[in-house]
Image (tube, rainbow, N blue to C red):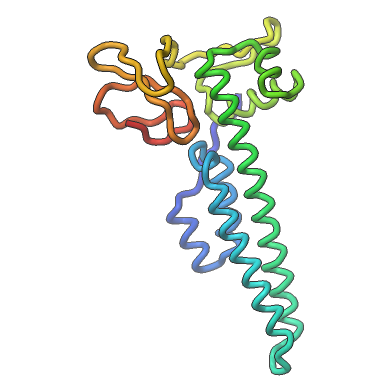
Length: 209
């Protein structure tokens, strides 16, 4: 199993954006790709920056009509910002699609307790191999801690997952006087936590309470 990759800090990303933004863009993409929580909802960040870059490219295009401007450097800027903006918008779309797919996997496997790969594939509308690859990527990224694919039995085996108690509804179920089940607002996974406790979602790492 691959180790979960560490993502760069937001401080480092902001500093690189200030001093040399291409590195900041690279670190931002790495952040939202490897960070479980960020990968679920930060496609809008990439989209916003991509639109800003395209706006910069548009401004530079208008400068081409100014006879006093350096045409060659302006064209370079247009290509640079235009290509960067287009790439970020494409990355945002891919990230959004991936996040939605991961949420659906979590809902089926964790909330619905479905571990048979053939049934998961049917609900996802995917082929068997594509479903296995998707589940394995989530395991490698740490969404299903300790899980593994049992190819012989065509199932995903969940280990170290505390959320194995029956649910009465999608929001809160009293397990005893001290516990309750909470649906993560980020990934949608059901977590069992102590009443009054602020914890991390065991699937995507987002704070829950």
